[in-house]
Length: 83
Image (cartoon, rainbow, N blue to C red; front, side, top):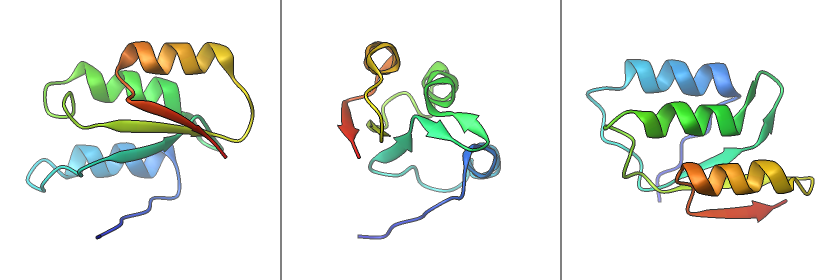
């Protein structure tokens, strides 16, 4: 496996914007709560465009968040993992 980690929401959005020529990942693990952003809002932004629409996204969270879980699954996340 080839894994790329990014330190937060800002770095992810910059990578997505700059990476139009790069191949898409096979799966994206996205934390709900990040110091500089909201993972559910980022999921919504990614899934709104055609490029990331088919990429499976697994949401992660350390706390039980029922509302974000339901919203994330409704936006296209394929699963939710509690850390």
